[in-house]
Length: 222
Image 1 (cartoon, one colour):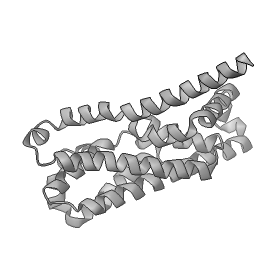
Image 2: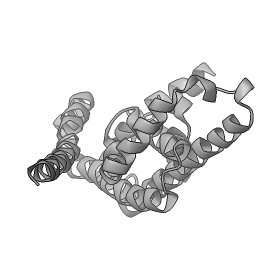
Image 3: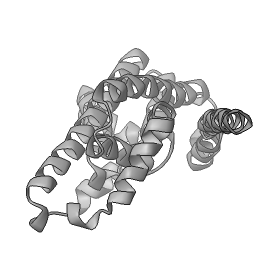
Image 4: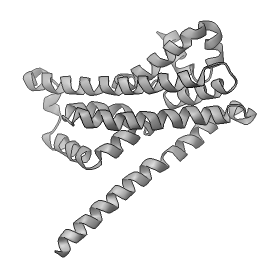
């Protein structure tokens, strides 16, 4: 178990070693890591952004195939989020049937209603950009399923978010992969890009918030 935890936590920093060890099977391993992190809340500790970024840097020096990485991470993210949504939906159904023995009774109705309103108001932005926010990336799909948010809408926004997230991190790693400083200061590179990645969702939420405030002001004026 200790070796497994060490492997999953070091896949981003020691990827070259694992490529030598596993060969082309590394693609399957990367898929499983991103899928598992996205699909199961309990595995949120698995490296996500760092795995994509590190993969991009390795692809830049020719040790991994760039197009395959883009497709692989996109599919893993979409499939993982769909699985997480399904789990949330199943948990709600089972909780309603067996309230006495479930966690459902510990979740206040007000909290559920508040989450539903949040998804109704900011659903598309929340789902699309949740991939860039730690913890939210794994809890939002579950909550969407639990609160019966439209799966069709969830899937559509999820696909867009998966494309943006995959392109952002893999392309950033690929673009910076040949810079010696990036390889020597991987943590600082990841930290800097993480901070920058918060800008788009912040702008999107700010615009939506201003639209709502403007609409409310117009209603009061009438």
